[in-house]
Structures are given as C-alpha cells and as structure tokens.
Image 1 (cartoon, rainbow, N blue to C red):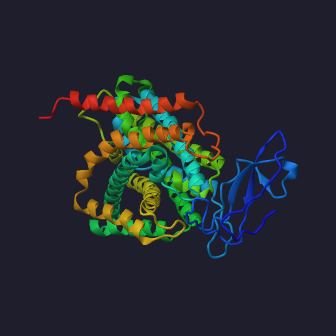
Image 2: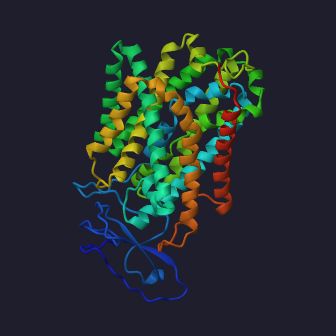
Amino acid sequence: MATSCWSSSLFVRFPPPPPPRLHTLELHCSKPPQLNYHNKLLRPIHLHRYHYQHQHRHCPLRCCSKKDRLFSNLNQSTFKREPGSVISATLLVAGTTVGAGILAIPAVTQEAGFMASAVACISCWLYMVVTGLLVAEVNVNTMRELGSNGVSLVSMATRTLGNVGAQIVCWSYLFIHYALLVAYVARSSDILTNFLGIPLYESATLFTLILGGICYFGSQRFIGAINGILIFGIITSFATLVGLASGDLQWETLLKANFAAVPLSIPIIALSFVYQNVVPVLCTDLEGDLSKVRTAITIGTAIPLALFLVWDAVILGTIPNLETGAGQIMDPLQQLRSTNGVPIVEVFSFFAIATSYIGFVLGLTDFLSDLFKLPTGQRKPLPYLLSLFPPLVLSLLDPEIFFKALDFAGTYGVLVLFGILPAAMSWSDRYSDDSELLKLPPLVPGGRVTLSLVMGGAGSVIVSEILENFMRPPLN
C-alpha cells in the first residue's frame, strides 16, 4: 500500500511485541522530499526505507524483505519508475572488462605457457570478482547512510577511511582512468585512420564525439543497447579470429607450463579484468538491489574470462617457440597480421576498445560529478568535458609517453585502487561502530580472513614487482 508524504520525516510507532522481526517500510512519495534525515538534498528517487521491528500482522503498510531494492529510479518528467536491467548491467560490466588488455595477455603470458597462464587468469578473475562485490557492498551501505542514490569511490573512501584514504582513491582513480582513456583513443584513432583514410586528429575526434555523445545524451536503455551491439560485434569478430588462427594450433604446446614466470604477468592480467569503476553506476542503475548487482558482476566478468582463455590458447598454441627471452616477446597482433585475418583483427580491436571506452567514461563522469558535488540525477556537461577532451588532446600530442604510465598503473594503481582499498573500506564498514544504520549482509563471506587475504595478495604482488624492478639490470 502506498502513501503520500510531503514532509521530510514521518514517524510510525508500533508496539514492541516479542519476538521482534526486521521489516522494511516503503514510502512511495507523490512529491519528492527535499531533505533527508541528514539534511542533504535528494533527487526524486521516491522510495525510502525505514527499518523497524514489529510483528508482520500489525503492519498497516507494505513490508518488504531486505533483499528488495533500496530506492526507485524515477523519470523526472513523468515520475514513472525506470528500473535498471540486469542484462544491460551485465553487458556494461562485460564491455568494460573486454578492452585492449585482451590483446596483450598472450604477449605477457607467453613465457609462462597456457596452463600456467590459465590458472593465473582464473585466479585473477576470482580476485577481481571479490573486490568488485566489496565495492558494491560499501557503495550501497554508503548510499543508505548518506541518503543519496549516487555515490562514488571518493565518498565511500571518505566515509570509511577518512581524508587520507579519499586522497589515495582520488589520485589513483584519476591516473588510471585518464591513462587508459588516452590509450583507447590513440589505438582507436589508428584503426579508424587505416579504415577511413582520414588524418589522425580527425579519427580521434570522431571517435571521441560519437562515443562521448552516446554517454552524454543516451538513456540507460540506449547505452545498454549500444553495449549489446558492440559485444555482439566482439563475439562475432572474436569467433572469426579464433577460426582463422586455430588452423595451425599445436595442442601439445598448450600443456607446457612455467609457473615461475606467472608473477610477472599478474599486473597486466589484473588490469585486463578492471571493471570496478562502473560498480557505483551499477548500484545506482539497479536501485541498490545487491542480488542483481551480484548477478551482473559475476556473469559480466565470466564472459571476458572465457574470451581471455580461448584467445590465450589460440595464440600461444600457434606460436612455434614459447621459450623466448624476456626481451623477445612476440606481439600477438603481429602473429595474426601474418595471416589473412588482418581486417578482422582491427574490427575486433575496435569493438573491444569501444566497449571499454564507454564504461570508463561513465565511471569517470560519475566520479567527477561526485567530486565536484554536482546534483545527482542531472547530466551536467562539465564532468563529460573533463572526461572526454583531456584524453583526446594528450593522445594527439604524444601517446607513447603514456605507455610506461600504463604499465605502472597495472602494477601499482589497479592493485591499490581495486585490490587493497576495497578490502580496507569493507573492513572499516563492517567492523566499525560509527554508523547507526543496520548493516546489510556481506556479499563476500569469510569475514576478516577473506579481507586479509585480499589485501595481502595485492600487497605481495606489489612488493615482488618493486623487488623485481630493483634487481633487474639496467638496459644498455
């Protein structure tokens, strides 16, 4: 049963019959409340939850389980609910994950061999799924406490880790996103220049304006449909690539494994599974429903995992000699360009980059909107201008200066921002007594042991990379 509320607060008193049971009272408002209980402005989400304890038979209003959505996304013109689609959210995660990293995985895992690299890919997938679920858990709890339906990683870090954690998140997030967006624009402009025969600056501008315009003007459903089309193109071109490259597949080569070389490939593999930047967007689009968010993250990252494994097997199974030195790693694109599948390689690369570009732009604009304290629910041009044009300009000036930065981002930025910090935020969120709200059930089981393993795993990789860089002899 729905009721109208025109004031900022509503008090409902129930007798306390034993045993108490937790229920949720949904108040569907015909007019958006201006202030919540923290005196913060809200956009019309039109569904607020008040937790109380009472017997179900005494509840005169509608009671819902804790697994329901946290709020409702409403069209501000029609005030009709526009729920997010799990399919669209899954495609957004898959599209964000499948980026240029898939083209680099065979190159960095060549020395380890397929069996060892497959174990590394599956392990990194499980790790990144866990960290993504931790981000979702903290994000929804932050929305519940702040009374807002859109919060970024900075707001989450400020609430759980204080100003120091927020500064680390802020700079790491900006560095990783801008570096990857520069690489995406640079690579896509090369592809468009080869196809269309236009100057490099025109192809880069065309790519930025078209995909950036989709992100700015498109609705949730439209962006989800575009992502679906791009992922269909990825799957189609990928299947064609696999068919072309698997003709000379040597099955016995796939059985080789060198686990000692696996640690060197983990940063790039972890970078290839980055999608956590769009988790706050998912939580808002799916109305804080953690069960839907869990489904979108798990399935959305399993699709890229399957593509990575097949791609890695095909490329490593066709390379004649896996026993190459560290300075003689073969580029998988060069391997495929030696066949007749040159055009389809570029098509696959473009689709893979375009899907990741959309996901990273959406994540960065949401981050900047929260950083500048812009009103939620309104698309302001400033975050999009800051997300689209700096990467465009930098990619045209000299994109090669960012290659080392990308390598550094994979080693340190990703493992800190999407490895250590999600576990640290979840630790503070679960075990601190500062919040008066009832905590949601954790998405990741294991308690402190799991969180310690997540932080320790990322920390050990970072330390090993630092030691490797110090012990590596300088190049002459």
